[in-house]
Length: 511
Image (cartoon, rainbow, N blue to C red; front, top):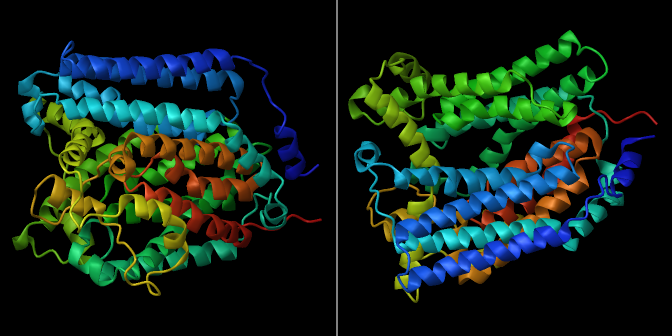
C-alpha cells in the first residue's frame, strides 16, 4: 500500500457525528444576535461599551463551539487545520481576547498611547468580523470545500508529480540553501532586506523584490523538508545522526537570518515550523516547543529593540546595505534591560496592542462611511481581487503598471492622516469592506473556508510532498493578510512552485 491508497481511504468519514442541525442553529443564533446588537446600538438602547462586550463574547463563544464540534469529528493533525489556526490567529487574537485592552483603566492604557473610548465604528467592524467568522466556517463545511479536496486527492497530475517519500535529496537541499543565502545577502546589499530596508529602495527595485522573497523562502522549504525527514523516521526508529545534523544546520541558518532581518517573528518562526512539522508526524506537539518559543521571544526583544533604536539613530553610523554594519550594530547595541514593574507591564500591553486590530481597522470603516467615493489615488480593492489570478501569473517585468501592494502606506497616509512612509495593517475585514461592504466580507471569507477545506483534505495524505506543499501554503490560509487579494495571488502563484520544489527536494520512491 502506498500513501495514495491512504488518501482514498480518507475520503470516507472518519468519525460519524451527525450534529449538523445543532451547528446550523448555532450559526443562525449568532448571526441573529449580532444583527440584534447592531440594531440596539443604532437606536441607542445599549452603549458602545456594552456592544463591544457582547460582540467580543459572541465571537469567542461561537468560535469555541465550532472548534469543539470539529474536534469531535476529526482529531487527526487538528491543530494545523487552517480553519482552526485562522480562527485563533485572525479572529481570536486580533479581535477577541485582546479586546480586553479597551476595558482596562485609562492609566494602564496610557502606557501604550491608547484611549479607552470605544467608538461606533469599532462595533461596526466587530459585526463584520462575526459575519466573516460564520462565513469562513460555512465555507469550510460546504460541499464546495469537500469537493475541492476530493478532486485534489484524485488528481492524476498530483499523483504523478507529488512524492509520498520523506527522504530528502541532500544535494537539492544544499542548493536551496545556497540560493536562499545569495538572495538574502543580495537583498541586504540592495537595501531591501528586513527592517533595514527603506521604502524608497523597495520602490526602485519593485519589479524584482518578489523574486528575492521567493528565493529567500527556499530556506524555509529546506527547513520543512529536513524536519519531515528527521521526524518521519523517528516514528519507527531513532533518527540518524546525519538527519539531525542537517536539521540543526538549516534551523541555525534560518534563526541567524531571522535576527539579521530585524523582525522578532522571523526569529521565532523557524522553531514554530519545526514544532508544526513534528506535530504533523506524531499528532502531538513536542514538549520543548512552548519553552523554546518563550525563550526565543525574550531573546528577540532583548536584541531587536535596541537594534531598531540604533538603526534609526543617525549618529550610530548604521548602514542598512552593509552585512557587517547590521551584524556589528546588533552585537554592539543589544542588551538585556532590567525593567521596572511599570515598564514590564507596558511590554505586555505593547504586545497586546500590536496584536489587536479593532481600533486600527475601525478607522477604515469610518473612512469608507464618510466617503461615498474613494480618492482617485486609492487602491482598486474590488478590482485587485477580481484580477488576482492575472496579477499572480504576469510578472511586473512584463506589466510595469500592475498594482503595487502598498495599501498599508495608503492607509497610513490617507486614512490615518500621517505624512510618513510607514505601512499600517488595516485587517482583511476593512479591506473587504472597501471592496464591497458586508457582502464582500461574507463572500470573501466563504471562499477562504472553501480553500482551507479543499487544500487541507487534498494535500495532507499525499505523504512528504503533500505536506511540503501544505506547509508552504499554511501561513496564507491561517493568518489572513490585510491585503486580501494577496491570499489568492499567493495560492495561485505558490501552488505550482511548491509542487516543483517538493519534486526536486524529495527522493522518488522505488517502484
